[in-house]
Length: 273
Image 1 (tube, rainbow, N blue to C red):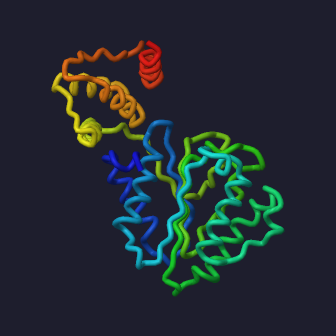
Image 2 (image 1 turned 60 degrees about the vertical axis):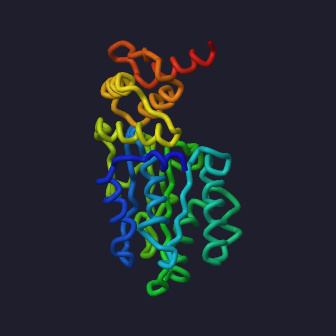
Image 3 (image 1 turned 45 degrees about the vertical axis):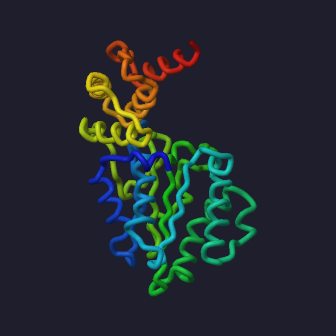
């Protein structure tokens, strides 16, 4: 929820996601992977996509179900076997299609069974003409444990069955075997300064705060040296501690330093003092 409240920018990426999820609902498509380095805003983008799907793009009457998971944030989202079992349980509750209990006895069996179950959904509850669709979004594939072939992605269908759309995000890790013919949305561009300013002011407004002009310029000048959403997030967190008399002196680091790590270290040092 917090990632959506201060979301700004990435309009082109949202348009691409909307078209993928909602255009040609009866046509089979390949899974879509959102890729980008850490801190590029993949999680916020998917969270905003889910919020807009449920609140604007698809009224409840349209029969669209959205399943969204942040991977690696709990025991049930870290290991591929636990994740697939959890997803199957939720889909069974949503659509009433029984899960084959024998297929849940091991992670290897679950990896084979999951795409079969998705196909079965499209021959039953999600069959053409049913007016129902499933949008499944999984954030941070790289946060899964690599055990039991999770990074092979063999547990995913190469083609999304009609009525189902699959979206995943990940860093471009070499260990993850992305299908060579998958749909791909790469996040490579730096966050624009005006978008950063809009996000900053939106965050401050929610806290009934504002910065002095000099403080705002200092923060944006620092952001210009490392225009990543994650860096802006840490900058905003620090700015919320300032008073109107604070003369900000946030660390820049040396050439080649990781700006995010330098700033996070500064924040922790402040907590210790």
